Structures are given as C-alpha cells and as structure tokens.
Length: 57
Image (cartoon, rainbow, N blue to C red):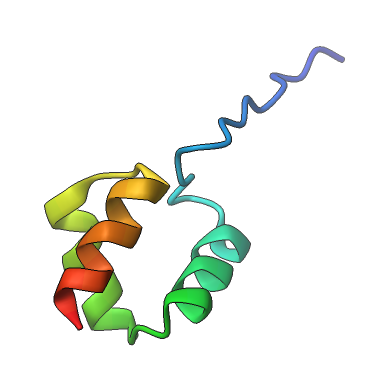
C-alpha cells in the first residue's frame, strides 16, 4: 500500500494538525478567536504568527 508521506516544515504551521495548532495557541496564550485572526493576517509561518501575536497583545 502506497501512502503519501507527510512533509513537515520546521518554520510553518500545518493548520490541519490539531495538535500543532493547540500547542502553538497555548504557548502564545491566545484564545481560539484571537489565534484565528492572527493566522488570517500573517499566514502559516510560525515566526510571522509569533510576531503578530506579540503585536496583538
């Protein structure tokens, strides 16, 4: 059986992976609504999300 291997990048967030989203949201201490607005503005880059979250607070 041929399965597609998931490709992970260290500097980008996989929004389909609930564990990655939960860990980053808890680390940044943001609510679900705040986190979604930050991701919409900055994209899936973890560095960009962190910078936008620090400006959001």
